[in-house]
Length: 446
Image (cartoon, rainbow, N blue to C red; front, side, top):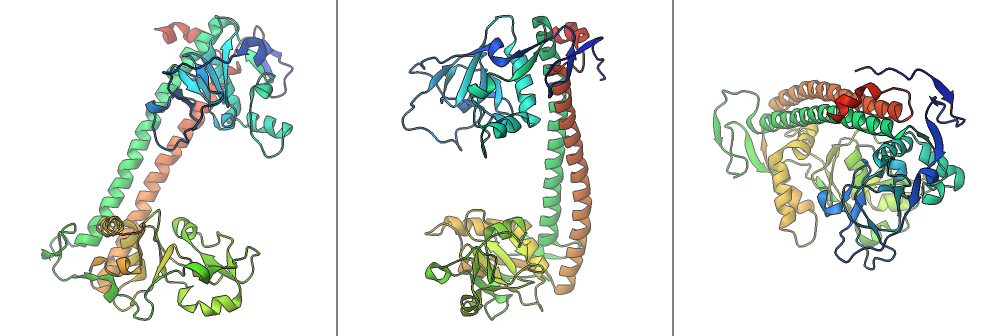
């Protein structure tokens, strides 16, 4: 849908705002809203302002991932319909109108309109649009270095476009309707993306457990969560398929990695961030040449496979050309395969994608005395392995399939980005008067 502009405009006198409709006012936030501080009630629950602009009871979203205050000093009451500005997170979009009654920390500015005719949700749309455009960040940086605080002291003097009250209602109704349509389209695309990822995962799992030939004779694998595998495949623990000379090695512990430096000289220490991201240029931990030589059994080389052993388990990477020689750390396990029996890239796929391998790692972690897995755990992982030529065929098939899925997923991702851009654009245009939605008021109110 295209929207017309207003018949006449005037200069707002504000650089960021530019021209506004001729009959609109331009006022500071403190002229339209008052800051209030109410004492909370004993039964009040926590209200949270989220970065998507939703302000609601915390329990309506989730209970985990929050820090609870031991003493609720300065907590204040929030009522339904209050305009809330999160002083620390406003720059990221944590501005909106509360849909709930409850209490919040003093880091929230609780604002109420000076006139009952003003629509807080219009100003919520406007302020959040300003924040997402970078206005709040630019304003905060102009006041204090390395901070994005947006407290009432700063917010109160922000100049806003203020349409007549009936137009505020029309803008809110139109934006509610149009953004709901876009949000549904985004949700559909995201569901499609998840289906594509699930299908990709299913294709990989089938290839590395059943092979590419649907007519191949099958046999029981002897592993409950694996089921049948092609009859000519071998089934056995990884420890018989690796380089006998330090094939599976966990990084050094304790005093072996003392005196690490961050001066970008010497030899690098690689860890979880490198394995998870696949970027071996990351990190700033270094050891000198003497320590590097003494830790030869922990050296990392091109062609090795690295695994995370704590936290984010199951991440695996085939190491390509390293930007700097170095060693693994204690949160990393290095695997070197027997090239005559097992392709390195095939093993990397098994670790990173095969559900039956991930299941074994998860089970081993649950049974461990300490969190994480170790070299013994990895050594005993049971693999179903085709002959080398078939490993090559499977890898070629997976590479082709991966390219197809990545293209499809990328197309969906681009569609989502365009929808999000349109959503942002419509909101910005409506709250600054670039488009006229008054003719949609009857439809919006219906």
